[in-house]
Image (tube, helix red, strand yellow):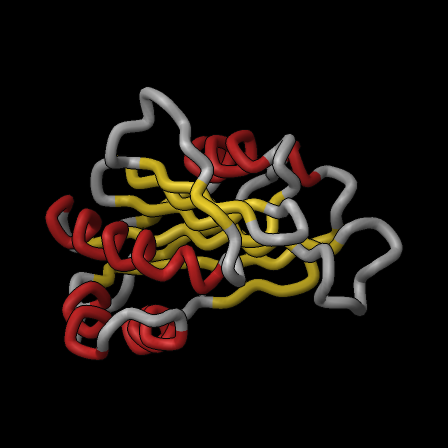
Length: 163
């Protein structure tokens, strides 16, 4: 069995006032379970998770709210065996975004083609996912003003050690 690629979380200036309260690796099983929990059919979720290469998730709490779920922002960076696997996973996450947004609405953004998708939940927080080559960044619960910056900063400051 191959060892997964190691992802190290870097600084996210857009969340500088937040405190990182959790970090972990989901793994292939965790990725598939996450997708199934958010409405993706079992066979599609398993197929999307099958190309997993490695991941890292962090959860950040706003100032003064370290013990509460409300207001937290989750950032998940994953890498895949190849770009085709990343596309398959990205498409599955896009299918899960309506569930993550708790009945919210898709945010239409021009020029982002098929590599970025964003939904707004009823509280105004954004759930957004972006794919670049064989990597995918998912941000859940982001303030609308910083969602794009969080995604971009994760791609730029998080490091991947290929195994």
